[in-house]
Structure formats: C-alpha cells, structure tokens
Image 1 (cartoon, rainbow, N blue to C red):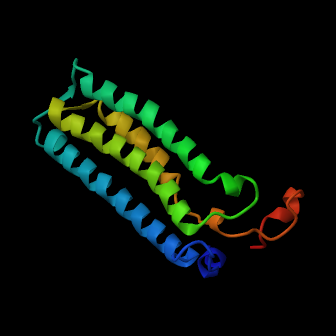
Image 2: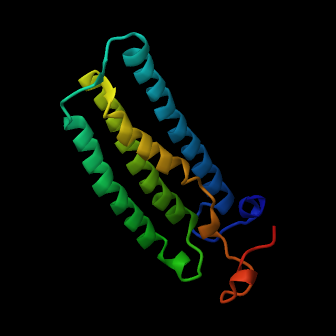
Length: 166
C-alpha cells in the first residue's frame, strides 16, 4: 500500500495519494457510524428490556432485504462500468475510483442502517438485524486498496510476473 500511496496519478486535479487517503477516511467513518448505531439498538432494545426478540411483522425486514437484493448489485455493476479501463489493463482516474467505491459503500451502508432502523420501528431485534449484519459483512471486505489507480509492473499475460514485488 505504501507504493500505491506514493504514486502520483494523472487523472484530474486529485492525486492518487489524496484519493486513497480520502477513501480510507470515508471507509473508516462509514464503518464507525453503523457500529455506534448497532450499539444504540442493542442498548435500547436489548439491555433495557423494551423489545421482543422477534416480531411477526416483516415489513422492514422485507424492505431492507429487497433493497439489498436490488440496489447493491446495481452499485457493483455501476462500479464495474466505471472501472472498465482497469479491467482492460489501464488505470482509472482517482476521482472515478472514489465515485465507484463510494457508490458501493453508500449502497451497503444505507441498506444496513435502514435495517437497523427497522429494529427501532418494530421494537424487535430479529429479523431486522440480519440484513444489517449481511450488509456490514460485505462492507468490511471492500476496503480501499487503490490498485485500480496505478499501473502495474510486469508482464500483462503472465500472472506470475504481473503483480508488483512486495
């Protein structure tokens, strides 16, 4: 990652180093917000005993699940479209990298927060907690690497030589 942060990009007025710092700051901030909301949900509903464990009304659960099933794959496809140059072996501008990653992060984040808010509305932890957990588990695996913004050293046809030396 040190090599990625030291590399200066040519795309727009935003350098690769700045874009990677912005991406990490955004990723960490978007990781902390639902964590504290989760703690508030557990504290309010679980510890204070003001909630049922499960409810028979699944409106929020179905809404959050439908959102995650529709919007999250669309955000992945949009990122793939924005990263088209990367899939062909070229680099992408740092601003495009940020837009592509922020689209996916925002889709997962909004779905998880919507699901956690369903816990408050229905006064029950389950089943509304499940889509939030799925969304945040996917979110944690999508940390910013910045690899799409820099050119890779090595031979493009030989997978053994394609990666940069570590």
